[in-house]
Amino acid sequence: MKRIDLVQVNHSVKVGDICPKIEPNVCEDSVFYLDGQPIGFYLTKMPDKMCGLADLANAELRSKNVPKSVMTRSSGIHGKDAVAQFSTIIGAIPARPHMRRNYNSVSSVHSCKTAQTFVKAMWMLAIESGKLIEEILPKQYQEQVELFKRVDSKWKFGELFTSSISNYNISAAYHKDTGNIVGAVNVIICKKHNSTGGDLSVPDYGATIGQRDNSILVYPAWRNVHGVTPIVPTHEGGYRNSLVFYPLKAFLNK
Image (tube, rainbow, N blue to C red; front, side, top):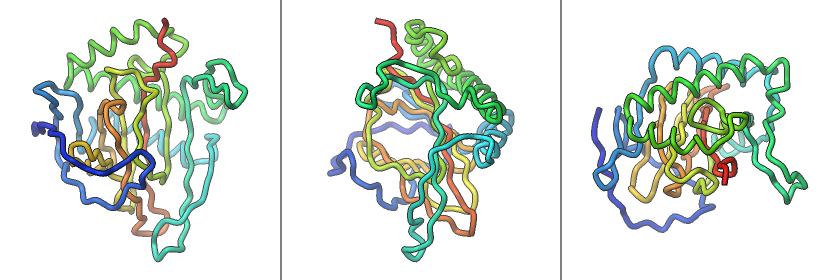
């Protein structure tokens, strides 16, 4: 795997800015280092078992079996064609007092009978992601295991995460995952078909990771502002879906 030493660069990107089209400059298996320490990695293709689980989870997500929040926006093709966009959250959901929900909970998707195959596939994918982190970033793995000793088992999704979101055709504006556990990493698995773009941009380091179908990116999303480049279907029905696992500090015991 290629070693990439991340170096801070000047930029004018702010939280909330729309991520423009940027050609990826990270396109091969890589380990990311910051100040001499490995902090994340990217694989253009996951191990076969993980690819199979991602294929299953993606197929279930795209079916009517899984409840989701749906929206419709322009795809950017000729400025008019629309593409389906939706997302689904599973695992632990933190309290949201501004929405009159003052308590932590588990996603209602878990109680949906038709969504059980999706939830199980995602759970197994979270477990396998943890094994991959242990193999490639053993120090990070041990540190995250220690952090998660402060998380009750009812709030865990897999061994190293509390929650998961699957985004279908959604290009996130620049943001920083301030709700995540500091010192932990996220996992982003990409499912991509007949589309371009949908790559992750980290302007602090001038890095844009070219997320291919069945690729995996492990990165501390709390550390930097990042966004997703525009997703443009090249054929009818084209899409880019991200299966994301993340650790929320709202579930750390005091």
